[in-house]
Length: 377
Ligand code: GMT
Image (cartoon, rainbow, N blue to C red; front, top):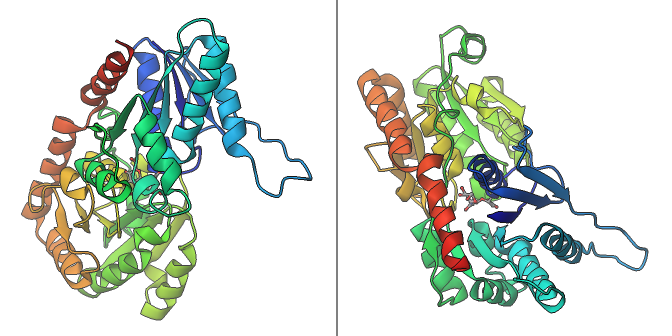
């Protein structure tokens, strides 16, 4: 199949999933065209059947607002026409689904042959945080209803789409995935020695784009409680608007000297491989790709019981889930995991096994291929 994929280039799970899907589809013999404002940050290697098309959004003095939606749709029209795309796959509804539908209309009006079908994948905040905002909701709901097929990364997100946007159509659940051969715990003795201070302290990790929804304040409060009981350090990987909260609460809680904030990093596997525990106390998480990546690297996750996280982590089996903002219980569970080697070992193995059983690329890729084949037939 000839497939165009639209996604964000910025650090975030939807761009990661779209890019990994593009790579996997190309490796499986499809011809894939990735369309984005910039090179997506996980597109780090050359694939013969995967091309990247950058959207150019020229400025003009009359425009006070960027016209990205139009230039994106225009690029998709050009790529669709030039390469006879069968499928346009929009990742994240805003504005990708809308741009894909607009491009399809233009291709329909101007083409002599078949026009591509539009598949939209919903990722989370495109529904729960931004998409349901009254300033976007009409267009988002219309774009979802008008796509030829729609997928959501969890049952929880499908339900939220139906209730929050009053969408009636079928939505298939296709979970997020990773390459289980690549995402595995590595031996990283130097990194481990650096963060664990030669094995004297435990390493607690948090990886995110540090936006308010990730509840960095809770990460800091939980860690402060852990550090009172177990010698440990906090490894924060990522950058974003809440970085200031890390520094402010670090000072207020007297833990600045225990925090390593290393910024946004492409290579998260070595960093996760140096960790003993992963905290994800988000206010909302439609899936929690960061948790999945930690579990694949044999790092037990303590997270909030929200959104799609219970579809990834089975509480008490492959990780732990606590009510939102339950700092005391999150800290108590973390201390148990860090002080009970048998429990830590059991959860670690179960977490890795859960990823291998349900979320490896070879299991999930056929679900997307089936979805494409269904809309084309
Ligand atoms: O978090 C966002 O604002 C958007 C999005 C992203 O691009 O990172 O995250 C969502 O999509 C990920 C990939 O499907 C999911 O793993 C995240 O759980 C989800 N984020 C939220 O629901 C907050």
